[in-house]
Amino acid sequence: MSNTPLYCEKIFPVFPWDEIDVVLLDMDGTLLDKHFDDYFWEQYLPEHYSLSQDISVAQAKKQLLERYHKVKDTLDWADLDFWSRELGLDLQELKMRINHLIGVHPYVIEFFEFCLQSKKKLYLITNAHTQSLSMKLQKTAIGPWFDRIICASEVGAAKEEPAFWEKLENTIAYDKQRTLLVDDTEKVLFTAREYGLGYLLYVARPSSRSRVQYSCNFPSIEYFKELLPR
Image 1: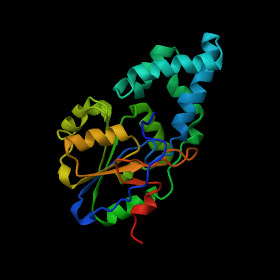
Image 2 (image 1 turned 60 degrees about the vertical axis):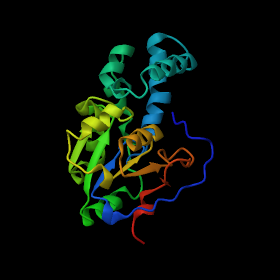
Image 3 (image 1 turned 120 degrees about the horizontal axis):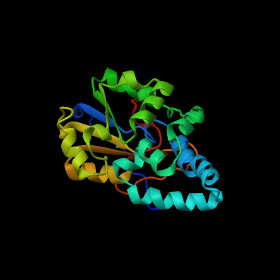
Image 4 (image 1 turned 180 degrees about the vertical axis):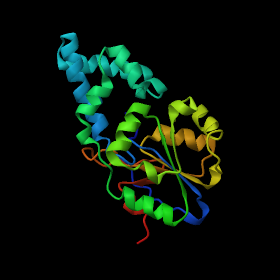
């Protein structure tokens, strides 16, 4: 869950696009509507866990929230194999049952086109488990837009960890001072800023079902159309 205060004045993004060569994009909440993930972890999974454990949904939510918190900001958080073992449920199968909720945010494809026309390198960097990634790429068909797709498990650390950014340099070649990162998690942006990434942008509406919540620390957008030339 975000630590962003309840209300912040919007910091408008103004980027010198001629000084940016590489765009790093998060997936869930940034490119894809996070409603799918929020609904799965906060409602759908607790309902099934309550049935398997013969407890109330409220009890299941409480127990799962405690488990989530223990592994937050680590690779285990997004690891479906880890949770399947921990909970005795097939999480991949459960996710497949509601994959109709997976969707791309408005203006994402137009932003891809803008980056392609501007000759920017596009990289998808995600904490998502490889099974979740594969399902979402198949559902949305956004994969071909990227020069490369990097899972945190491939790097060996979650994006919230400083080690991720240090190790990413061994995975792709880029000038961090000429790179833009777009993410819906402030902790990721803080870690990237400490690492020295040149340009950072916060997505203020990760889910279509949530209200806009601007960052007090980083430029924010609701939709990618705010980055497109008028």
